[in-house]
Structures are given as structure tokens and as C-alpha cells.
Length: 190
Image 1 (cartoon, helix red, strand yellow):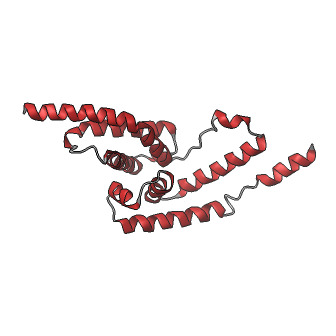
Image 2: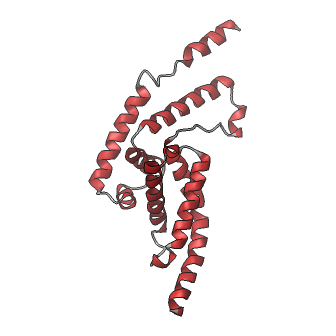
Image 3: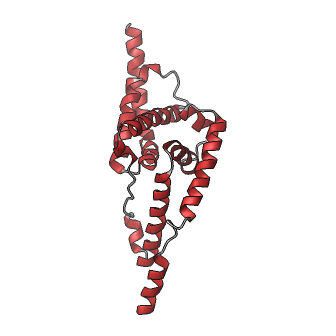
């Protein structure tokens, strides 16, 4: 009994340090999934809490990043099913670095980012998760399969469908930027 308690405490201490080192990456993934800063923070905090509660089940810290992502995926999926607030899409303001760019360039970038965020937000949750993990986070198909507990072939087919749908959405009439006319007319009026 005492050995079990000591092992659990040691795992919690190690896990706490590992969680701190993985926080930024978990937040990036969470933000990409839910498109909202406060929801992403909630998701990462819930992931950390759940992970600490399960510390005694950890036998190796070798693939802890995938395990953490799997825990977060399960929490995200549960929240999406039970709470419509998790399905909202929000676009953050640009960082201060971009303030030195021209208004036209900022407008074009903001419009492009808005279009991509909107299009990703239109994807089904399972496709959204896969496209974010593979294309934005660089996970392998095998790693995504382990995180989502699905076959590699399913990862590949969902990713293909997600990319096709995203391409159609971004190039559709709804997402084609109509701001070019405004930019040109602004230049002519000067």
C-alpha cells in the first residue's frame, strides 16, 4: 500500500513537470480545435487535471505527448457532444507584430485567416481534429490513429475528405474575397 502511494506520488511529480513542458503545444492544439482562447484554456486545464488523476496508470513517459493529446481529444469530443458553446468559431485579433504592415496587407491577411477559420469551423468535428493534428501539428497518421482510437485507414480517408471539403469551401463563392474591388477603388480615389 505504501509502495503504491509512493509510486503514485512520484508519477504525479514527474507528470507535473511533463505537463508544464507540454502546455504550449496542448494549448495550440486545443485552440485550433475550439477556435476560442478561453475554451482552449479550459480544455488544457481539464486535460491536466484528468492526467494528474490518472498518474498512477502511467508506466512510461516516452509517448506522453500522444497520451495527453488522446486525453484532450476525449474531453473535447465529450464537450462538443454535450455543449454547443464548444462548437463556436471565433477569430482572434492579429498580434502586435502585424501592426507595422500596411492596412491593405492587414485586411487581406485578416480576410484570408477569417475565411480559413470559417471553413475549418464548417468541417465535422472528426475531420477538423484530424486536419489540425496532421496538417498544423505535424502528427503522423499512426499517431493520430492512436490518439483518436481509429484505424490508420480511417485517418487517411477522413483527412482526404477534410482536405477536399476545405478546398471546396475556401474556393467557393462564399469565401472568395470580395475586398479586392474595395482596395482598388480606394487606391483610385486618392
